[in-house]
Amino acid sequence: MTTLRAISDLPVLDFSSAEYRNAPFQVLSDWARKWKIARSERGVELLDYELCRNAIVDRNLGTGHPKLIDLLGLPEGRPLEYKRNSISFHNRGDRRRDLRRPLTRILSEEAAERFRPDIRKVVTGFVDAMPADRPVDLISALCDKIPSAVYCHWVGAPMSDAGFVARTSHTVQQVHTREPRHTPAVVEAFEALIDYVDERIADRRQTPGDDLLSDLIRAETSGQLNADDLRNWVIKLAEANTDNSSHQIAIAIIELASRPDVWTRLGAQPELAARAVREVMRYHPRTISTSREVLSETKLAGVVLPKGTPVFANIGATHWDADYYSAPDEFDIDRAGEPLHLNFGGGVFSCIGRFIVTVEVEETVAFLARRFPGLALEATGFAHSAMFTSVTQLLARLEPASPQRGANPRRYATA
Image (cartoon, rainbow, N blue to C red; front, side, top):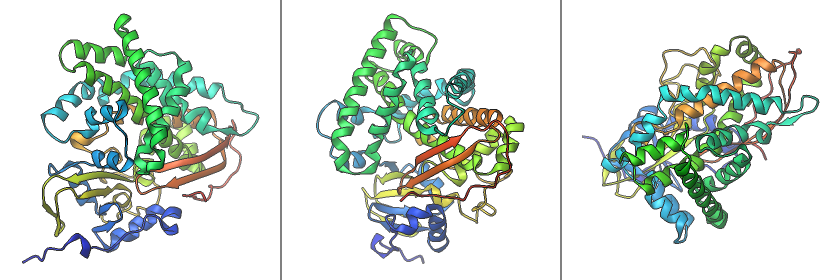
C-alpha cells in the first residue's frame, strides 16, 4: 500500500540561489536525479519528463494564469478585462477549444510554411542593414525586429510600427515576473497595445487583405469568433510573439555561433537548421517551466495536492534528464530517436504560434551562418528565472570569412 505524502513533506528547491542562476540546467538536472517532485516558494515542482509531459495535458490541472495576475495585482480596467477574457484564463473544455480552432488552422505547421518566404525577406532585409565594420548589438538590430516585423505583416501595419510592437511585448511579458512593482508599466503597455489593436482591426475591416488579421476577420464574419475574441487574439499574438521569439532567436544564435564546427556545418548545409534549432530548444529552452493549477484535489507522484495548488512543470529539468536523453548536458544536433522537447507545451495548452516561432529561428540562424561563416560573438549574457531564459547581451562581429577560432566558453548568467 502506497503511503501518501503531503506537500510539506517534499524537499525544497531554491530558484534564487547563485548556483541556479549561474548553471540552471545543471542544477535542475541534479535536483531531478534526486527527486521527481519537490516544492518551492511558488508551489509544487515537477522534475521528471513523464510527470511534466502528463501534467501539461492533465485535465485536472488548469491554467495558472489567473493566479499569476492576482499576484501581480492588475487593477480593474481594460488590461484586466482583456486578461479575464483571453485564452490564457480558459481551462480545457468547449470554450478553449472553440477559441483555438480558427488559429490552429491559420497557424498550423503547414500554414506556417506560407509565411516562410516573407520571414526570409524580413531576415534578409534586417541583416543587409547591419554594419559589417564594427560589432553589432544583435538583440536590437535583429532579434527584436524579426518577430515584431512579422507581426506588422500579420496585421497589415507599416514596418515603422515594429519598434512599438517589440517594446510593448517586452513590457507586458513582465506579468511573468510575479512582481507587483512591474504592474504600472504592464498596465500602461497593455493600454497602448489595446488602442493599437483596435486601430488595426478598424483599418482591416475597411481594407481587407491577404494577411492573418484579415483571415481572423473572415473567421469572425463566418461565426467562428465574436468581435471580442477577435480583438483578444490580435492582442495575444502581439503580447506573446515578440518577446518570446526574440529571446529564442538570440539563444539560438549564441548556442550555435559559439560552436564553430556546428556553425560551419549550418552555413554549408542550411537544411540542418531545423535539426539544430530543435537541439537548441532542448538544450537551452526559452521556457524553463510552465504553470498549472489543481482544479480539484488530486494525487500526483504519491503526493496529495489540494484544489488551487500551483504546479510547475520544469521543462528545463526534463530536457537534461539522462533517463530520456543520452548525454543530455552535451549539445548535439545529430540526436535521433529521443523524446520531443517540451518548449511549447502540449495539447490544448500548446503554444498557438509555435510553428511560426520555429520558422523565424530557423530562417535567422540559417541565413546568418550562410552569410557570415566567421560570425564572432564579442559579448553574450543570459539571465535565468524559474520561468524563463532571457538574453541580456548579444554583441557580435559579422565576419564573412571563417578565421581560426575556438568555441566560446559557456556562460549561462550575467551578474
